[in-house]
Image (spheres, rainbow, N blue to C red):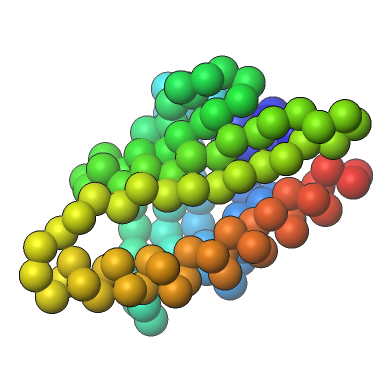
Length: 129
């Protein structure tokens, strides 16, 4: 399971929900720590592109994508559970002041759970293969 998530050239593109993610390009690396990705996603009705660095705070268990411009960080935690694994996706959003920050917090709380449910569904499908 972890290998699927950490493989940004082949595995990870199969688990990003196409209704939100338009592109995922590998700029350097491709597997695990040291990978740099460029992602375009539809968010709040507009296409947003960001670049992220991939780290492995706990290799084989936790992989994190950190937006190079904002510091927003999404982590995938994989915990083996018998023949399966439990996967948790979590995002830390830096606080921004003012109305923009209020809107971002609202949008993130409303949208990310939908994206994560679909991503976990796609991970489960890949795990069954």
